Length: 353
Image (cartoon, rainbow, N blue to C red; front, side):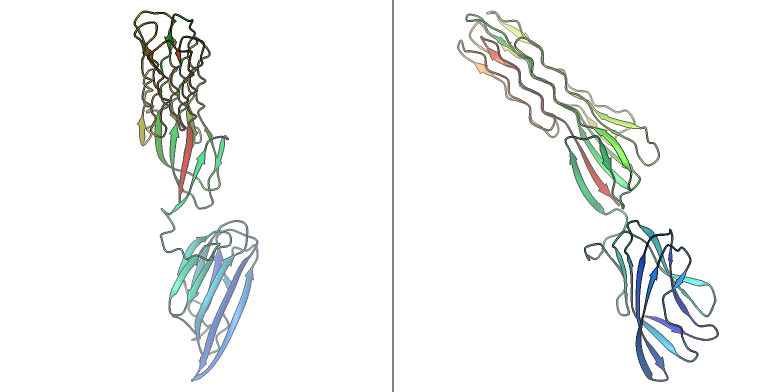
């Protein structure tokens, strides 16, 4: 309950904007009590481009009491502003009743029996704290810039590098070859403070191409995020996976090394950083039997499956790694076949107020 009286200059209810915005709409409904005679009324005020305290309550006549029944303050501007609602008692010091950063199309409501609450742009009550709330998740598989929301102060960033491509093979009717698998992309997770309504740069790591014929696969590329609230140039990285290696065709037993395990990247102290699984080795038993190397698994993506042969068989292309960041498997057989491509990486952004 907010009661206004007049013992001298009269109490006043005021709204102050922290920054000048186009328009703040205020509605105040009340009942005036004069020795038992009750008269209802309302006052409607528009605050336009002002940071000075604006009186939104009626003038109180000496000997009267005015009970504020409802008060609504709505930000109909395109930008947020800090709203302060205060009560000044008979010309004295203002007492702050409510202060909150009011986002565009948000509303502060006061009810005589319930007190203050804040509604979002859809009319939903904000019953959780204004800081620490989950604001949304964004999955970037392309692009280069992420702009934070108007309420965002913290982000959790999840990075997966691109997977390495599997090796291709070349063969002939009496000889077989088996390519090794590409390594998976590494993973990094960062929790950091950011600024609201601010553009940050990222890169999504691409999966490495599968090797053509008897060529090695291509390396996956890095996924990165640049900048936080205090350092606009700090960079976090999840490394791309290493490529699978080729094997010359032949009929003798041989192993081919898979793409090396992707190391964790600890630069600038990410919250979590783990490497991607290395690609599996390829092996040939003789001129008709063998198996290519499977692609490595990332935190968020599986590697391509190996190609197994138990008889003289035409070349079979490697299997692509799945997104996000799985390594491609090597090809296998006795004729030309390309390795599987590595899966593309990803940049996932979770925003919190």
